[in-house]
Length: 535
Image (spheres, rainbow, N blue to C red):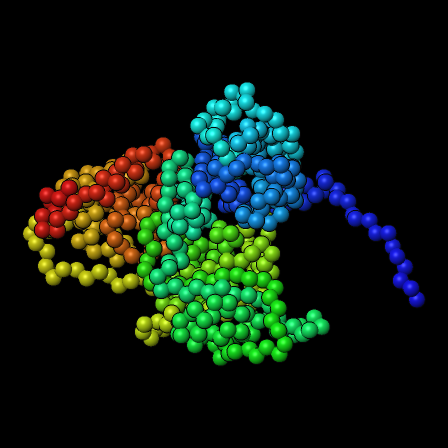
C-alpha cells in the first residue's frame, strides 16, 4: 500500500501565551548579568550600575551589522557573530530585558560604529534610527567612538535584588564569568569604570589538560554500538603518568569505576559526535580574600567560548562531599578546580534560560565521572586521611604563650574579659583592639559607630565582639586581617554574611567610613614587644 503524501503545515505561535510562558521562567540577578555579558564580544567590556536604577553594558566590538540588527528583534534570533558568544538561540537577552524593565519604559540600544539606535520594550521594539542629533545619546555615550551599548532601566524588584545580593558579590560573579579572558589579557573588564583583574581559577601549574571527542563505534552501514566512547585526541602528548590512568579510547558511563578505565578496542571505526577540552587541577591553598562561596568554585566549571556560563560549580558525580557543601579532603586533598570546555551544540548539559540551574545529562554525568576518576588517581592525598565528618569540627584553641610580659598584662587588664569567640586567644584579641584603637579605653564599632569599651560588660547593648569579614563558616580560621572590633548587634545581624557585602547592602551611608577605618586598620603596625606603643 502506497504511503499517502500529506501537505504538512508548520504550527503557529500564540505570541501572547508564549510571552506569559516566558515570564514564568525563573531568572535570578546573576542570570540577568550573564545574558548581557554573554553577548559581548569586544576586548573592552564595561558594566555599570548607574544610580542603582540603570544597568549599562558596553563593549568595543564592531557594533551591530545588518544580521545583528534583525536578530535583536527576533525572540529566537542570533546575529552573524553568534559563534563568538555564549548565547544559544538569541532568546535570553530579550527575556532579561523584559524581566527588568519598569512598566512603560524601554531599553535603548546603541550601535556606535554607524551611529544608530533602537528601543527594546517588553517583547516590543522600535526600528533602528540615527542618533546623530540626539543630545541624550551624546551625553550617554560620552567619548565612546565604536562598539555597542545597552542602557536598561531597572524596575523596583530588580533594584531590590541588586541591593539584596550586594554589588560586590555580583561583580565577583561577573569576574568569574570572564575569568579566562581577563586572566589571559584577552579582555579588559571595568566595573563601574574601575579596571579589575583576575587570576585563573584553574591554575596552569600542575594542571592536566587534554582535548577529547565523544562518540560511538560505528559500522560501515551507519549502525553504532550503544556504548559511549571518549577519545583523548592529544594522547601522545600527555605524560606517562596520565596515560597510565586513562587510555586513548575508553568506554564511559555514569557508574564507571577506576578499574573500568581500560583501552576500548574498536570493532570498526570511531565516529565523533562532539568535541571538548578538559582542564583539571586541585588547589591546596585557601583562596585569598574576598573568597567566593565554595559552591561557586569547588567542582566543575562549564565554558563556552572561554566564558564560564555556570555560576555554581557542577558537583554531580565528582565524589563525596561534606554537609557544608564542600569536598572533603579525603576526596582530592584540596579544592577541585575542574573545567569542561564544550561547544554550543553539546549534549552534555541541559542549559535553560536560568543558567544557574544548568544540569548534566546522562552523557554529561559520564564525562564528570571520568573526570573524577582521573583527578582522584592523579592528585593523590599526600597522607592517609579519614573522611571529613559533617559538619567539620572547629579547630582547637590557639596555644597561649607560657607567660605574658607585664606590658602585655597591662593591656589585657584594660581590655577585660572578651568572649571566647571561635577560640580566639587573649593575645589575638589584644592585637585587634590595639590595631584599631591604640591604647584608648573607648572605641567605635566599625560598622555603626556605637561606642565600645575596652572593659565592656556582657549586659551592655554595645557589647564588644570580634567580627569576621569573611564569615567563619567559610574559612574556619582566625587571622587579625580578617577580624574587626564591632558591636554585638551588628555581629548578630550580619550572621554568616560577608561583612563588606553586608555594609554595602544594609549601611551604604556608612560604607565610606567603614572602608576608611578598615584600611587604616589593615595598614596599622603592631609590635608584640611593645603593644601599647603600636599604632
